[in-house]
Image (tube, rainbow, N blue to C red):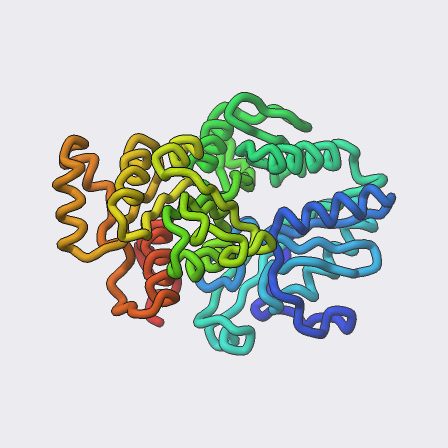
Length: 374
């Protein structure tokens, strides 16, 4: 089923109030699993593609139970009401929905967008009477997430059948065409959920990627780390702060409730043991060569996607001279002085500049603006 209105429909009374702030998509799935465990039914709406301006990215979710209660968001509010209505209908007839909503430029400001756009949303019913295999796949997906194993949940948009894919195997309701499986593995490597097309048949699959959290290893439990840690957590990173100095790496400075791991070991041993991979950034912050450089050396021997070091240009140049045994190509991996040049002065501003540079390294600059001519 496809809906393609020229303007978004008005939300019904039960959802007329503004939706709550977006929550983590895995938390939404855990909520749905809890509903199903209680014998309830639920429908999950997922953004599978966007064009132009969209307030919610691909992969965003909204879950609805039989009473119309909802968690999550697929549009920031502008089409939620219609999606809830379709989700309730899906629970009644057991059929998935493929919805398309368009917001014209002249109405964009009314729903909080800079310009017009289009969003495609897939709605899948789950629970008693809607196929036990979907619930088993949901449990398998959450188990992979708990074990921090990369996986992608792939939905055949023509049939609604789902398959869970990781680097070693696939399980689910159907075997994927080899060309689609190759594309799925590519989306896992790129960490980007995507709408996939089989060029031979024209069939469409949506692959939602569930990779382990990104990691940020900070060498130095200094004031900048205190500011950077909560920012990085909000951006989706698991943060580890390494510092052998107990006075710095203390629970008073980094409370356990903040979700940060403190490692009071020398940086070379600690960073090596943490084994940075392609989803890990390492940043040294101490201004002390005895601590920073062992951490940098361990990071250079890893697959970390970002390595940064705090310090002036002169300090960084002397650092590179002392680490010349790595060779110029390897040393070019170190961003120093770390942080984008935004004129930062305070610890919080410096933290913003560092996280911005890490994000740029991870995501890359946008090739073009979402809306041409705006």
